[in-house]
Image (cartoon, rainbow, N blue to C red; front, side):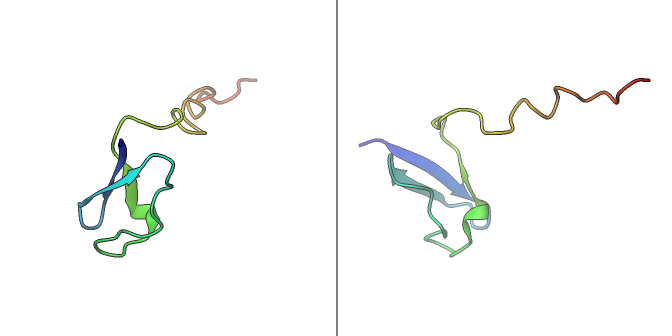
Length: 63
């Protein structure tokens, strides 16, 4: 069974969960909330909602 890999930024431990299971709400090692848990394997559904959008209009409007 393939697993998704996450890392906890607080304790630097690797967290593995099976595909189909969401990201943990808390680190199972240090109990840090999910904002500190980041995916490290190349999986996922794409590049995120905002990726690429922030550089489309980086010039101020001209008069």
